[in-house]
Length: 276
Image 1 (cartoon, rainbow, N blue to C red):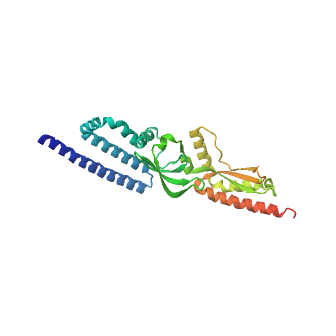
Image 2 (tube, helix red, strand yellow; image 1 turned 60 degrees about the horizontal axis):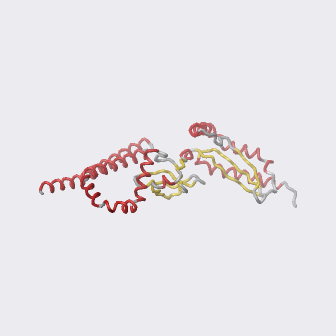
Image 3 (cartoon, rainbow, N blue to C red; image 1 turned 45 degrees about the vertical axis):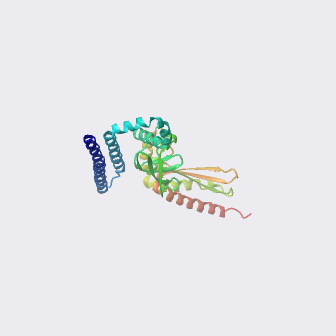
């Protein structure tokens, strides 16, 4: 009896000491990596996330090893309720499976921009249960300030789109709609020259980045030169669509500049029309 009590007490002590030790190691390791990354101005969130997940996994394995015999006896005693337990914890189990799918296939890394279903954001952290995203608005390529917590089971049931290339350069499209009173082909060449001038300072980098994306995806993508397409809507209005391959942080700036140029040219041309 005394021997059993001693064994039990030693297991309790180890159960307390192991988490304290591993949590201390995790705290010091994460603090060290972040301090080093800050001094070198590097993004090491992926390494921090891997350290946390590895030490959490190690802690669970060690605790299971300590209490393996007790857990086995407990599992046998509740075998009759196994089906009910599986059904009750189905979502939790699916999240665990989703985590193992994530670490085995590596569809994205910390810092990547991804889309899961209708949710878009930058991957900030992953753990056994969820993936944390910092929401990104693809219309403006800006952070919305919202944090999304995606259960890992969604990674299995939903398509994952890796949008990481959009972090630096994006194929930005926008459309201006006006009535049919002015022929835009009159000033289309001048407008295209304006678009090229706005993209001139980063044109060489855009060409190289465009080629990198095409090599990795093994497909031909739009760009890097700007293009303008003129069409008509179902109501008969004139639609002018711009396609610009540019840095994401300058997409709105270039869109506003081209919109201003278009409006100036459109109204100038309209002023030349005879009064009706």
